[in-house]
Image (tube, rainbow, N blue to C red; front, side, top):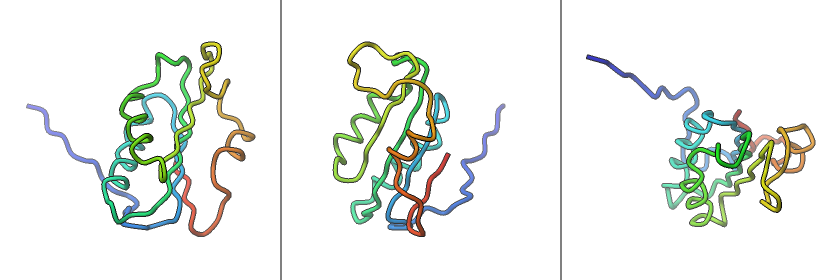
Length: 119
């Protein structure tokens, strides 16, 4: 028998906790981030803006892409996703390379008291 516990919340995310939540994830690190994104977007009274900067080596490595894209399409006014791919196909529209400080400055909201960035 296997017993499983969790997830354990370290930061309580409540309705309109912050004006903007931004996330930086890579590879399988998307799973806990996606749980938070889905939780926030599931509340129709929550107006929190969400940005996801998600890095992978190749486009085929992007886990849960269909699910993430569906959320972004359904919540265009609140959820923006930016894919960073180290080896993108030509004209893929994704940022190329590894996440850099320039990408963080361009893609994520500026620091402030009502902004939280989770990595």
